[in-house]
Amino acid sequence: MGAEEEYEGGPDQLAEKMANLDEELAAARAETLRASLADYDLEDDDARLLDTEDYAEGEAIYSPALPVVAIVGRPNVGKSALVNRILGRREAVVEDTPGVTRDRVTYKAEWMDRRFSLVDTGGWEPDARGIDQSVALQAEIAIDLCDVVIFVVDSKVGATSTDEAVVKLLRKSGKPVFLVANKIDDARQEPEAAALWNLGLGQPYPVSAIHGRGVADLLDEIMKVLPAISAVAKDEVAGPRRVAILGRPNVGKSSLLNKAAGEERVVVNELAGTTRDPVDEIVELGGKMWRLVDTAGIRRRVHLQQGADFYASLRTSAALEKAEVAVVVLDVSQPISEQDVRIIDMVLESGRALVLAFNKWDVLNTPEYENAERRRYLEREIEQDLAHVAWAPRVNISARTGRHLDKLVPALETALESWDQRIATGKFNAFLSELVAEHPHPLRGGKQPRILFGTQAGTRPPTFVLFTTGFLDPGYRRFIQRRLREIYGFEGSPIVVNMRVREKRQR
Image (cartoon, rainbow, N blue to C red; front, side, top):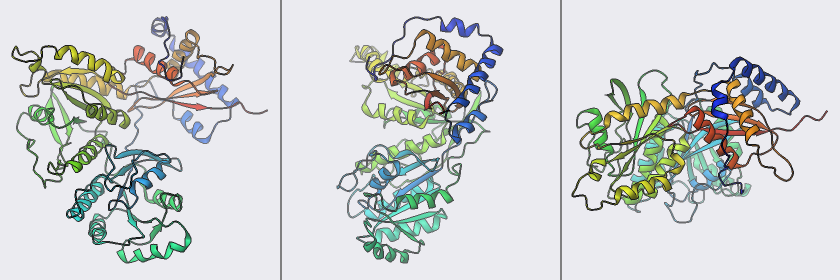
């Protein structure tokens, strides 16, 4: 079996055994397993995790909204190269053509054990004439969505009029700004960075994004001012649950919002120039209040196609930062597209709960609908393209007529319940030991990695940590996830399974 194949365990009695579990006995056994970890080389972070895992079952452990760092600047100053350097991997697209950053705009990053979201705004360069306006607009939105700004200037070119336009916005924002003089490859070029003092943003940080020079010092300074929890994407524990309605253009998001709100609240036509409209909608659905996070807040600029993709993506990222659950709207009259799958993948990456809303369902039932085979094709597409989210609740709706809109609320409630779900440590370890007894991990190079202990480190999304003696195959990890779902539900929520490989202490 290849590591990437799905691990297929045969039938087992796991469900019955877990149903008849003696919970007190299971808790005592888990305590013994936990104590035996003392024989292994643990890190400080492990001890912290093991101290926080004594929560009662069902008690949610909240993962606060990560602080957000945005990178702004003119095209071709090296923003994407800096993103890659900070991430330590080549994730952002880097080319010599201005404005090539596409699709992904938000990345999860880590420095000195601090996690944060990194927003790359390299994505939009409409034409030379509108460059001042477009870069300023981009910066304005990024500033709104972040806690700290990194402003990148090409030290070889020096400050341009576009840079000066962005400086005005940055000064006004009151947010911490780090001025980065990029392309300083060695000490002889540092006077070029010093020339940027006259922008009035304080000390310029000389870096070479390509070679990595100066980036660690820059990140050290950023960590001093970065808040622990984002002031922008604050988790409001109280108040209505927050829902983002996502989907590619024209799938019926606005109609769905209007039907849900019971009035024409969302302007369905897109006017260029309406840059931000940060109003969330509070609506009543199924007898409960919900906060619909406004994803139309940053309007697409239809006459600038290149910018449109970038804004759609930035808007989706921003909405997900604020939301707890995402409803991805798909148009059943059209084949499932790459863009649909990409939006779903953004939801998975953000760790939010997920509901799939198949819209325009009424169209499939009309006699005059030309393609009677569409339904059959749709099922096949769902099986092939959406297999990785087979656990997400599906609702078939018509946003235009309001048909089956009432089914949306139970789906949202199910997904959020799963997102908040917690399994007691005793139960989780009993589940792991029964699973491993019936389906041992395959031997790798004559060795068999063992699972020493497992705990749920957090909820929203449910995050499990396994202490192991070696790496578990990706297929085996997916198998654990699948059996967790089969026994505990988790319908509508992603599940994260992390490993900590630890070695036995040398006596």
